[in-house]
Image (cartoon, rainbow, N blue to C red; front, top):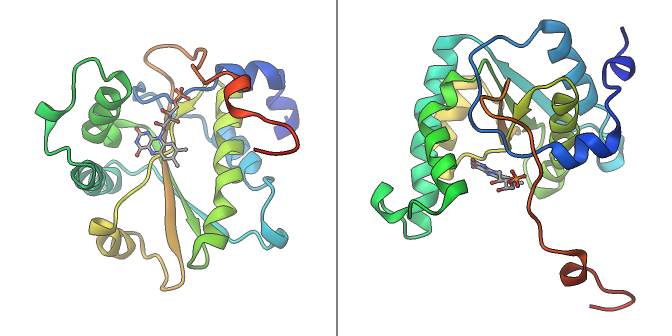
Length: 202
Ligand SMILES: Cc1cc2nc3c(=O)[nH]c(=O)nc-3n(C[C@H](O)[C@H](O)[C@H](O)COP(=O)(O)O)c2cc1C
């Protein structure tokens, strides 16, 4: 089966039901589907078609555990930058922050974590990773796999580079944990068009 055939879910259904999935089952993702998901990622728009990307697929439990330790430290470092010093500063009503905090502990349990890297430093190359990440998430949605975009933090950058052998000119832009959702895919809540669109000037 070709990737195009496998990703036959209607585009509207994929876009409108793809949301941040942070709780996933440990069940493995079939190799074929993983290849389809990555194939979709490398067909994304990118600057000058230079395809300045490299994907590191983490599947080995020991490697994922090492990543998870760095991720949890990075997650709290980002919160500290926002003045949040611990779980006591995250209100129970803050659903997505609670769920992101849980992910910071559980990310290593995802069957697959894809590190979306740029092969050059700087924002230009990193910008080419953004469409690839969205293609990847939509393709994952089409085969029933959930995930979410996450980032690291400067505090763990050097150790992450060492751990994964990222070359001097490369950078880890996003880490996407992937797996079959414990809950369900669903609708997202966004500001209405009337608030965020204008015509001919801001
Ligand atoms: C650039 C970027 C960085 C993100 N970083 C994180 C992260 O570190 N941890 C996390 O759990 N979610 C992260 N997210 C996911 C967002 O929280 C999520 O897309 C947003 O809350 C909307 O969620 P929804 O699509 O389920 O409505 C990130 C998303 C983007 C686009």
